[in-house]
Length: 199
Image (cartoon, rainbow, N blue to C red; front, side):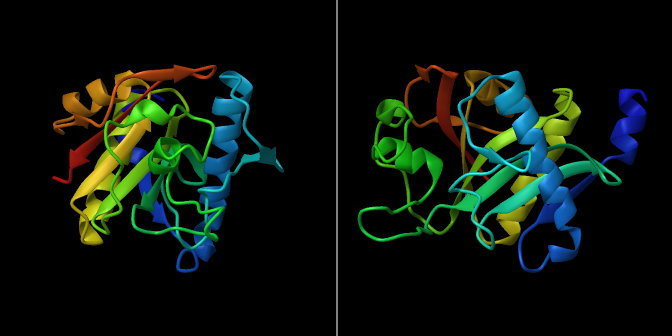
């Protein structure tokens, strides 16, 4: 299948429990794709169960998944979390990945942000962006769908965490990214936190 045909047949679904329980198989396949890419291919030290990479930020009912697929075959996806939500007691609070890294709650560099990340209800975080073949058309469709979803929820900003190339990719797609801190690194690679206004 050439890229033009794939672009014509690809669908984008936004999935969130309990409303989208009848299509939850697509979210499951996205979580399995994360295992194949992040654990098996990239060698990240992440937890998985039943072939799914699943962590504390995959909070059912809170996380929204943007999934690119052809029928039942998942091509890629990303996870969205609103930045004002938190879970847990005082000593074990989970908010979202960029903020928790900055506050030293998880094993990521604390210096990834120059200032404490937002807790505004109009801000969302996008992480775990992945695609089967790294096709820019798939990534662009996922990001555009995320942008539209955030806008539909009254949001005006999206925070990203990924390799530095993600910021260049966002700029090439017409977004106007602003770095939230320096490029940082650990055993899994180099990372950059940045934000974009919703278009």
